[in-house]
Image 1 (cartoon, rainbow, N blue to C red):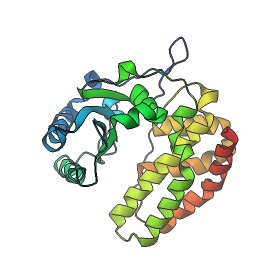
Image 2: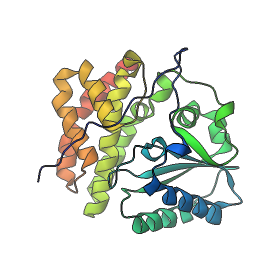
Image 3: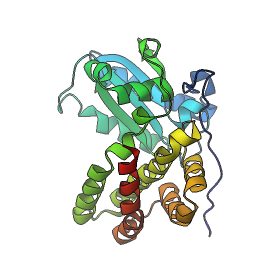
Image 4: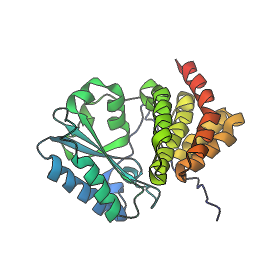
Length: 264
């Protein structure tokens, strides 16, 4: 059976001054995902109540465009202080519980950042301001600066070399096909989004949605369109074969790294 790659997703528009418009809203959360959001927030409060400053929903669920079973639910929690590994141990339990209970989820992501991290890191500020909606606590977004397409919106490009090294280490020792598929999903999504980061300023818009990333990249690099489409397919339908993953990664990695250097 041939798996279809649907032309779905959107780009975030700019306002009249050229700043990225945040299109996330709790009102857009689809009915199927509302209980997941509610239960995830309950789990945050159960396991991390004394540490929580605020919690944010991001991604397709926050935009009302989630597609089961492809989409995950992605959240960011801001803690009053940086948490230790011991304090963060319930994260895995939360994610495993939600993924097993709601079988239409691709995954359930729990990320923590301290309040100090947010104040010091413009990339984190960019993430909250342009791609997140507050679902608990004091919303930081009104106090954060506005952003235009540019360097602050290129987190994947800036860490691509390190990500490649991590991937190769993981695939050297990892034998579980499920974990290999997760690695495939992770790196392919990053590479497709890097493709968009290369052309974001020329396109004067912003997106994390995979198909629009592929489409915008292909406008500027038609000679690489076919190879990027292969990465897109593996991002949507990951495989548990380390050899296949590395073949596709190696076919584009040098090109992307070279173009990233050109961004300055």
